[in-house]
Image 1 (cartoon, helix red, strand yellow):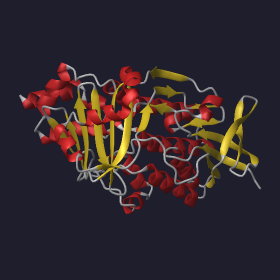
Image 2 (image 1 turned 60 degrees about the vertical axis):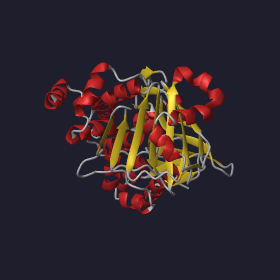
Image 3 (image 1 turned 135 degrees about the vertical axis):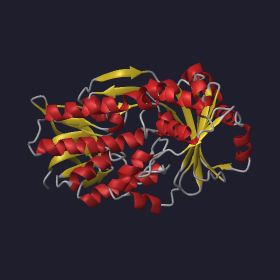
Length: 401
């Protein structure tokens, strides 16, 4: 058996499977390995923002997702108590979002990679990164039946999540790190239709959100500042339910619903990692991670899969050097996600909106174009840097006046 590849991708979820699929579609020999067997669940807010949906459309996979019965989300509503800002999260080309279960989405992406020609090894645990003369050249691992094997490649891609084994093995440098800000808990409820809305409720030192997913279920996630984590974990169930009761109208709707699963917990770090080195690349949460409160992880993973697959294609074709192309990828990534990273880390503190933001929310309330812009900023369709630019804020405030 030939165990030599152009690229080995470790991790077969929202970053790894698209990277493998895109490279395989370009004609490269790709091995895609994951210790899980699919369908397989994972901790996730599930939301695929409109720009992520646009990627699925480009890849020819959006119809497959729609065919699974996942309801589209056409409206985001942010309930601040006194006012609610509601609008469209997308654009004419990508007007909606989705909130798929990962047991559905990840399997869909894995199958697409296999159909593109990638060799897929499920239940394969990578336990060693091979290096020669300071350069990564492959992997060693063990299959579910206990058989050990070695595979070699020009490049090994770590797409194995925020606790990436690949990143640890190559000692990828972290930077712009920030502590976890939020303790979040989610579960699934039946009998809670959302009618195409993704609802977010902002209260004092509390926040929660709800979005419809597969099988008639709605994901409801709530949380509190990390400073309360130790105290509140003594009664997570009670604190979760009391958080939902902070919005009486939503709590009343919840009376007719039934919780169908346990509570899943997530306390998430915020960091960047250098995403490349001799013979290795990191994509997705392995390379860059932030709190899930803005639900950007899947769309970010899709975008970076495209970016790095295109760069590797240029490298393999001799058009660019590895270091030059990868440094450009890192620079473009950091410039693109930087404003959302800052916005997310601030939002995850669950501190009350500062006076300036409260005035802005009041100014845009009831004006649909302005509310759409606010919603699209939260969805990542437009950058927080663009939305909060002094010129744009000046226009919004002046128009309201």
